[in-house]
Length: 270
Ligand code: NDP
Image 1 (spheres, protein in one colour):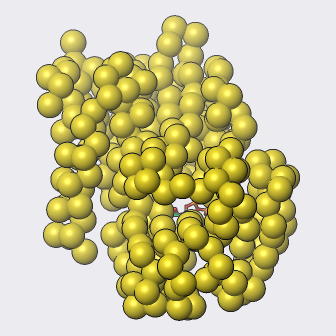
Image 2 (cartoon, protein in one colour; image 1 turned 180 degrees about the vertical axis):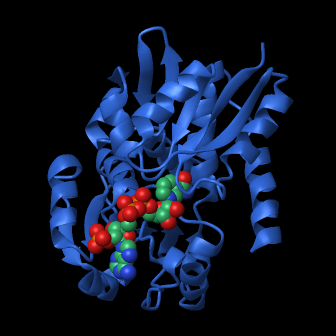
């Protein structure tokens, strides 16, 4: 029987997850298909019931459902519980079991990029959902973390929950101090709405934007112009997908191949 899997979100048609996972399913000759399912905010409970009835065995969860998925899962991993968000579900007899693969996915990209953060100054721009996953990894690895966000209360809550040693700055002040960072991780979503950051000249640091494609284009152009070594979020996208795939099927897929495939697709459509 062909297994069904997919990603649930709104919007979701732009998601690269079907492209990534269906390539791996073919490569591993697994009889399954991975689709995108649009489910409106507030309708996740009925959406999950309907997908379970259709025989869906595994899901990734994206905006705006990651917190709601946490509440609806029969049980969740320690990582998901700590982050307050679920982006991975697997169907078991007693219901959906949740996990969060964004945090380990980000961690894998640091490993692959040979980016050492222990004891180093790391600036995190943003305090939204993805910033929580990023901050947990950076704090666990001993980074000297500074969180910069437009809304101070959100940065304070993030630090309280996940990175109690972190310093907090306004976005404006953080941008001024950016050259002192060995690594800047940009999780701001303003690239999607046409906004951009005015960055200072680099002093040898890395600018890692976890967005990709059009969402990251303006910030990465600015970062390169100011001399930052830069990378985008395609690696994180592929890494969190690979960890999901391994959870479902017990085999780690080829991340380098998927990364190259995604890079070609994003460049062709940007
Ligand atoms: P959230 O909506 O949870 O957070 C958005 C962040 O951007 C907040 O810190 C918010 O600040 C800030 N922000 C938004 N607009 C502005 C603005 N005009 N000026 C200043 N700050 C602004 O989003 P997520 O954390 O879920 O996602 C953020 C980005 O990360 C997205 O682009 C998403 O595509 C990408 N992403 C990539 C992943 C990958 O695998 N590569 C995984 C997950 C996300 P405030 O708190 O003040 O509102």
